[in-house]
Amino acid sequence: MSPVYATMSLSLDGYGAGPGQTEESPMGDIPGMALHRWMFETPEENTEEQARILAGGAYIMGWNMFGPVRGAWSGDWQGWWGPEPPYHAPVFVLTHHEREPLALGDTTFHFVTDGIHAALERARDAAGERPVHIAGGPATTNQYLRAGLVDELHLQIAPYLLGSGERLFEGVEPQQLELIDIRPVSLTTHVRYRVVR
Amino acid sequence: MSPVYATMSLSLDGYGAGPGQTEESPMGDIPGMALHRWMFETPEENTEEQARILAGGAYIMGWNMFGPVRGAWSGDWQGWWGPEPPYHAPVFVLTHHEREPLALGDTTFHFVTDGIHAALERARDAAGERPVHIAGGPATTNQYLRAGLVDELHLQIAPYLLGSGERLFEGVEPQQLELIDIRPVSLTTHVRYRVVR
Image (cartoon, rainbow over all chains, first blue to last red; front, side, top):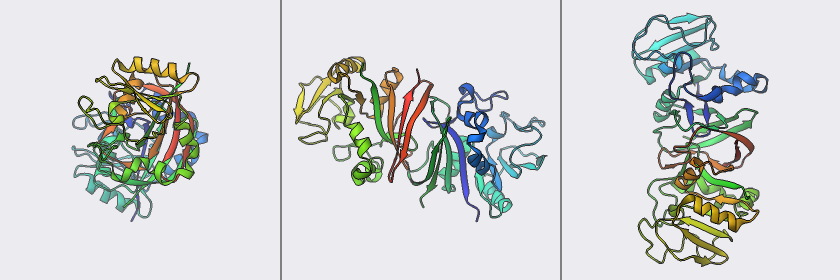
């Protein structure tokens, strides 16, 4: 069965997104894209980790990660990524509002209204042997962590304290981890942990 | 002027102490001393960091770090460390209750009732050129962080999620950091950050 990886860029104080998300600010009020600078400013330093992030057989993401729409779908929101999203695989978006699948390039967004377990089952079916990636945001990743469904954490810990926002690890049960590897680069520190069963 | 280092062992989810501290459980309800196993189980792997922790010219700690006494001093509590505490330097304990200094070996505990700035001034006077260490717990370190008085963070990040307890970085303002160095060992990851002014 495909392993489940949770990937997130977060601040040293544990925030994966700032408050105040809007259509113009997908990450909320985080100054200067602090958490994701590594990805945009130093891609050549981070090819291995970028490749890993993009190697998922299927992705799961929360409603806020897909868009700033807070109520029912207005119908025309297509995600943050333009006509060629980087996933190149099925993406299962958790939502309370039904919507037809949306194909953009070779990424198809499926809108799942029956919860995290159903989304994981569909993602596993789609991923085959490849990993399923929980792509965030923090609220979604925390739901999967609380349900004990994450096998590995792949984090990028940025050298910032944000002081507020959406926190990864909120409300999880005590859990032992095992460090897989750690690699500091210019603008973040890549770190992977295995969840000890 | 002596630099100010804040030192703490914490979980990956940011807790420096568990809930439920008692005289028998200085760190609260944390299973198996999870955060401090590196110090007790693998001293030979961590000589450099241990030496750094013990090289302070003076130390500042909170009331809970000195003891489980929650009201006025009962009079005979001598700290957690027995007759030869490891500090070998003046230790300034923040408290609301006056008490005469307590000398144990060549460590003297001074009880400071007039706040964090007064404690830092006294610690700086005592430390000379050597660093002042903010030794915790989280509530005390957070007060110094909020006041912008910390120059470096020296953390040991243990591979655990605790899910509850006392959180380092609670209520701090947004702050950029700079990674100094990072060193994973068997039971924790040593990491130092400089606060960017």
